[in-house]
Amino acid sequence: MICLKDIVKTYNKGKSNAYEALHGISMEIGDGEMAAVIGTSGAGKSTLLHILACIDGYDSGEYTIDGEEVGKISERQMAQERNEKIGMVMQDFALVEGFTALDNVMIPLDFADRKRHRKRKERRERALEMLELVGMAEFAEKQTNNLSGGQKQRVAIAWAIVNDPSIILADEPTGALDSATTREIMKVFRDLNEQGRTIIIVTHDPEVAEECSRVIRIEDGRIVNEDFDNVD
Ligand code: ADP
Image (cartoon, rainbow, N blue to C red; front, side, top):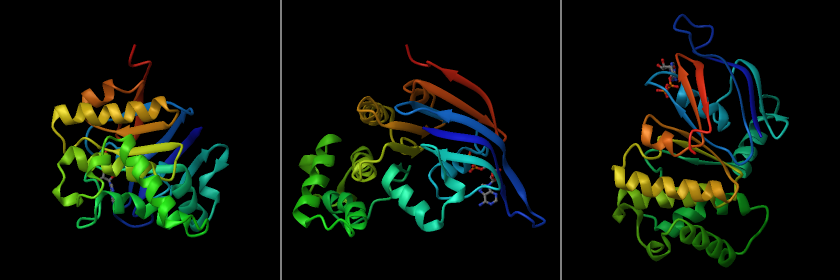
């Protein structure tokens, strides 16, 4: 369970150009929910997502994952938390060009498994399993720069889930895709959600928001309304 209480975030704190981007955000997202965060450009969506992803800190308030307060742990623990509990999907896919799809998906495993000493063959099998899950097994040996946008995003989703995170955070994951491909990618997210993962998607695409069971709207650094049970 993700719980935010009165989170305030100021950029350039203490300087003349200080800017309070989040004015006190409170929300709870239960295990297994699929939520969209929507709002106009500049509303604070990415700021919120970066805090949720443990990429960025905050000035005041409380952020807990499964009862553990994120603000109180060290940078190293934060990185570990991110690695174990959170999978991140970005708009621009963030894949290593020149690497195959399989090699890309193995990167987070190599990083996480150093301590666990899982054999390369096992890591490879795990990465292949993930590619299969997102419908990309037949492209495993293809370099990612030769893939379409939708295919790249599938690989990026496999990359995000390879360490089996319980939470998937996505920042405009369909922003660079046409509407048919957007629907395909949303099906992948829905399937992952049905398998029990919590999913939070920042989007300005109403079609994407419609696919989520809950919509959280942010305006000017505040939650302005929440629409539960968005989908019948
Ligand atoms: P959104 O994702 O909804 O478009 P952001 O979270 O990116 O909005 O930005 C919220 C506000 O914070 C905007 O006014 C933006 O200009 C400001 N902002 C974002 N990042 C920074 C930064 N690194 N330094 C200063 N201001 C920032």
